[in-house]
Amino acid sequence: MTDLILNNANVITMDPALPRAKRVAIRDGKIFAVARNDELKGLRHKNTKVIDCKGKTVLPGFIDAHFHLHGFAESLVTLNLEPRNNVRSISEIQDKIKQLSQKIPPGTWIRGRGYNEFYFTEKRHPTRWDLDLAAPHHPIRITHRSGRAHILNSLGLKLVHISKETSDPPEGLIDRDIRTGEPTGLLYGMGDYLAKAIPPIENEQMEHGVSLAGQELFSLGITSICDASSRNNLTRWKTFQTWKERNLLKSRITVVLGRDGFSQYEKENFSSQMEANQLRLGGVKIILHETTGRLRPSQAELNEMVLNIHQLGLQAIIHAIEEKTIEAVCHAVEFSLQRSPRVDHRHRIEHCSVCTQPLARRLASLGIMVVTQPSFIYYNGERYLRTVPDSNLKHLYPIATLINNGVKVVGSSDCPIVPVNPLIGIYSSVSRMAENGELVLPEERVSPLEALRMYTAEASKATFEETSKGSITPGKLADLVVLNGDPTKLSIDEIKGMKVEMTILNGEVVWDKMG
Ligand SMILES: [Zn+2]
Image (cartoon, rainbow, N blue to C red; front, side, top):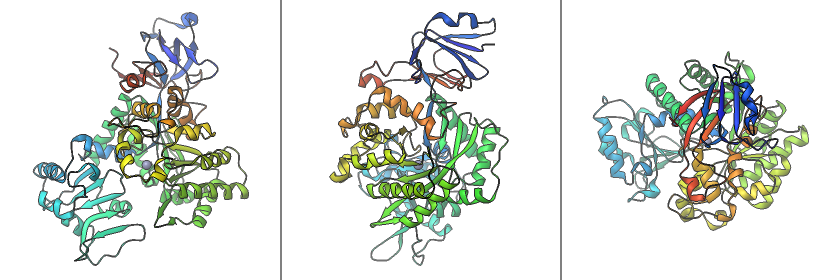
């Protein structure tokens, strides 16, 4: 029996077989029929719920292909130090910390995130001493907007055993006072070290964050996420299961494993009682960096890692930002394909921030997908225009170049690095406009339909789920979003103002602003 019919809708299906329609019928959590006119009349029974969409636009539910649930949930229950939360100086950080320290007992960790020194009046990172002034008796950790740098106060440093005598770890850097050699509190690339040394956030608080995250995803029309955290391992996999079983988060999740998680996976069984449409395992994340001209991991190490993942039939999901690292990924995938030909591997590059046209062609010929973050242009554009060297700026997030050269490009947020809102990603892709109104490579604009595709049909391919998601096609999961306007008909300015009116997951209305 038909459970739900959406009537009088402007349906953009993302399915080339029937691109536009007026009605959608849903049965048992799946799309049962899609019609251009009245053909669905016979499907209506006395218990069928009918929603009059009043001409509003219905799309497949949005998919965020690169997301960090732990980080996002934590960000919702820790201090928000982002410039858009009006934190534009070190003294504002101090005020926020001081206020919180009066509410929680001394000795309890104070955590904050998203500070951005680019917008500070002081134009520098805070130091341990700045943080000590705000709360000397609480250990403090604040995280840079990039997620790659952290600042600890003196008590925090003491508790994680970092002192003048500590040498830099292989992957990281302890910033020091030039005269005294004392750590300034600023730590680069030491996220993994700190994750082990600092006790995790209280379980109850974290779960509260997860349920807030779930609500936020629904309010933005996101029905599926792919968690691309390099710290994902067996423990995290079990945590995801618990959160799902307890219904704290209803959006569907694909979990990518990090390096540790992958070696556990090679030895242990990662089975789950959860239905695969709710929780599933995705590929393997590799973080590739270029520091002082050297690749980490090295090209030879990367080749072996990718080959291993490739031969197991899994997807390599490689963080690469600079041209050199993207080239190295091409090399590694080519190396794997020569040794072990495999069609449709869908290895992914995450970010792919600086990419020339020849490199785009190479990505396309090797079948490497790009999972990028168009909303970085909106949220970071002003900073890019002032800080990215010209040689890189002219190839920055070249979405049109990638698509026109045959690369499959997928949209995502990398949340909590920037807010999760896919409508901002869609707006950025079609406008190339930063938050302050400046344009960043306007020649890289794409059409609204291409932008929508990056968050729906293309995104479903990034996790091999195009047979169940990504378009409004009979047989696929009934995950839908209703928008207050049609992005293919609105002006660029109007696209910016678009809102989610309703979100449907598995045929159930989970968010409703239509009234
Ligand atoms: Zn990320």
